[in-house]
Image 1: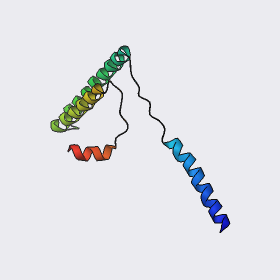
Image 2: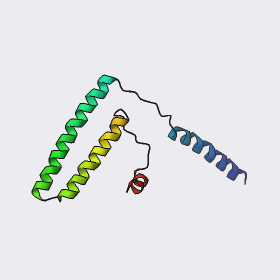
Image 3: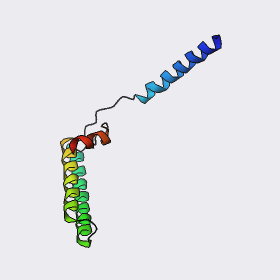
Image 4: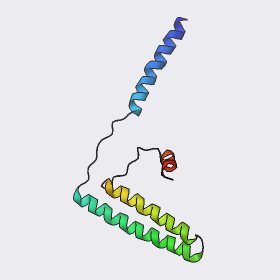
Length: 103
């Protein structure tokens, strides 16, 4: 019985040490105006290329035009959210639950 209590105590102690490291502090990151402009330019270039790819898929018949437009609209919404957050991605939300609420 004594060994059981010691084992439980050790398990709780070791588990507490590992759990405290999982809950790492999140640091608020701020980008300078130059950094924001640089990321904004890169993101705009990527969006234009992705739009061109989707337009080619529509042209080749891979996607219907409605689906292609829906994909482009989704990309633009993601870009707007990123712009609202000063181009700092937010990773702290549960994606699968958020999608259910939007649609």
